Image (spheres, each protein chain N blue to C red):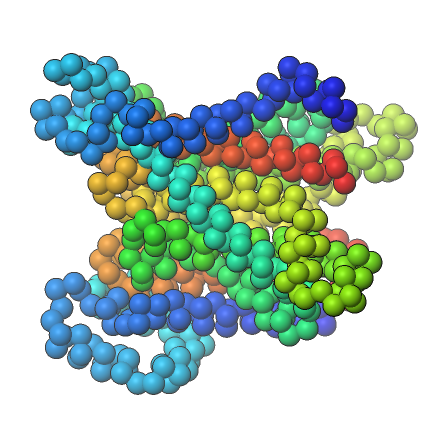
Length: 307
Length: 279
């Protein structure tokens, strides 16, 4: 277990290092990163001054080492547009995005898992096919369209929910559903596949022969064993949700990290855009890491085969 | 499955997603002839008119937008942007990704380590964020969107091609051809690729749907195809601003988008089932 943990941590570190390097080189795709940091109205002198201040007139490898050092000490720099440390800006928006992601996860789990379970238990019957159709439709819904349609129906026409903005729990309902629908489909599919897989195993068949009812079978045997893939998918979904938040937050004017990203691109505030991307990647890597660890805790078989 | 079964009407009907996709592709190809009006022609006298509005013999079947352009014509032309961007980026990322994956699995050693680590790194940045930061640097636009989507998605194909090739690389027919002096490109193209193309097609079909969504998403955020070019994503963005007064601007492009993505996902799903059963 210790060796696996060490090896896995090493991999995560390599991935983080790689992402930082990738972001550094993406910045330089057009050759001159200074142009990403100054307003469009900047004069040639402004640009030169900025270049010297930031040390962008030095050799590329010096800049790269500098960037690595900043990242290693969690220094995300300063936004010249908002004139504030990037960390402060991120932290002021993070809670909103976490709220939204949590809401979406609840929607996806509470609706997705039971749908998957029902699909598996009714396998081969029309019910199963109908639910599968619905799930596929959810998966194909562009969040920015389902979001706008919800605003139209519940916000504008029926006036049940506030069309956009933040503040109360009612504000959270539509964005959570819009963001959660995509993950809902993933959960339903995973739950269906893993329950079907468990259903075909001997212990279930022998339990059925002993006369154990479906309800008890599901509660006592199926759910526990089918939970493993669900846990690992949740890790992957967290990064999906954060990425999806960019669009959903724009649709609902939800002031989280996603809206911040879009506003920062419009304002040419590249330091903030870069920070959000790094944060997203970091969360993804951390979530994958956590999933792998959880896996070995929940399922001792994984531990045995990996070490 | 026997050939007789395949032609039963029910089996044919089950292929309706392919029909839907074909119809949308036809719309894209025939857009200039199908669209009742020039999609970019503005008519400030006919702004924000509801579906069915008629002015001087011109019928706005799906209404008009904030500049008095015909929504139906723009939806039809929007199919072009969506499909061309999605197909190009799928081809580009597919070719690069498959080549990388096959080479890594076939050559092994340091090539494998470097390439597959690179794949891991790309996959650890959420795709939409990677696309956003790259567009932020390169600037928006039709060609840039295709490049950015390809850059973001090639690792997906690389993973699949890698896994599939690994399973084949030690099989006798590959080893034989190698022993007889076949070059690496020859072995990969003639012996390995034909045997792994099935799963790759499934991935490509599902990715097509995803690329349509990504393009629309980037255009919705103002980072994709630039106005006045008709893109469903950009139309949705406008429509959002007029949602309280002109519901049709957002509704119809979104519906088209949904149908295109749905058909691709249904086809990909079915292909996956077929290939899974064939094994």
